[in-house]
Image (tube, rainbow, N blue to C red; front, side, top):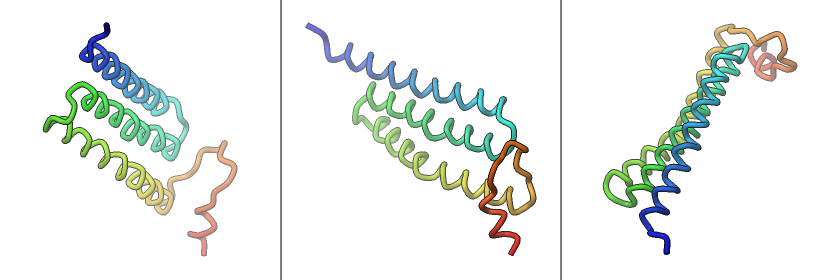
Length: 115
């Protein structure tokens, strides 16, 4: 019969690897993407999906001990704030004239700020 501790270790390791995978993909995107807006998208993925995967890994390993509750709290805080912060940074960059890459097709904010 399979032990509960072994199942916890497997789930925790899987979630940790998923989080690390998203961090890796975000870092590749940070290096390879052409402009600040695309890079901002990649770094937001690192912050949300990567960190949230690691936090879920902690919860799966330790359960609802005090450190597990803190991991849940930190994970949800990151999940709620990182996309909003990235949007605000991107909007501020656009307002200050940081250009889009030449492959960009449409600029919806450009219509608003030229008024």
